[in-house]
Image 1 (cartoon, helix red, strand yellow):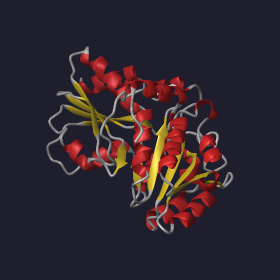
Image 2 (cartoon, rainbow, N blue to C red):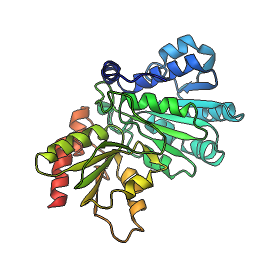
Image 3 (cartoon, rainbow, N blue to C red):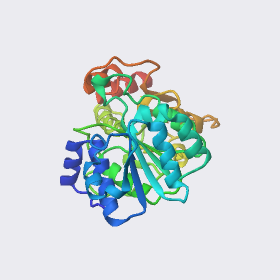
Length: 321
């Protein structure tokens, strides 16, 4: 198990989500030999260059052919072997959706599909590379687990957990170099169990991925306005920690925040959990609305989608008033 320290958290923040994933896989490979890693000609971009160099017999480059990559992963996983198949999020989910649906969802093979550069971090490359709908699509596939870790330390914990997790998983990686830090010391991580990042009695903000950091910053802003906001890191979007959601029923407002489309994502999952409940607080869904954002810098895209900490706090204040 990798030790979580402030120094390492700063390093992971500096190098970004993809490089941290590569480090996590490399460290796991040094301790075990029971998994393969596949890349759609993106070893360097996936942070897998060192893994490829040190464990070439366990690394397969399928070329820019995500559908074929999932097929190769299925062949390797037929005997229960764990396989990590990596590419940019829209290509490994939408381009290969049928193969993911059949080989992972239907056949329940032990494949971990890793969506690199999800959300808005691909910035100037535009909507062909943005991960807007990927989580929603993967969540809709029966039997699929969907995980969106908050920061570098959470990515390390997630990869370590997935090495022992049986079944198909979509690992959604958001954020790049300069990845905001949420965890600076060791913490308990379990697939399917939310983490309390901040206690609060007035409202609850449930977030995933990079938005956990922005949700916490928004909570700090709201505290200055006299609003005590709890923040939950709902890293596992499916299966959702419904118990953690139900514990928020005493709040004035439940807010969901995601760097993803609000159609079918974390907000929808929470709403589905709350739907049968007669007495419940209202829910505010914050995320990427039903549109394609105009390409630009990452900061510009967050502002365009109203996902900065200040904008999140502003929209919460509007909902409360």
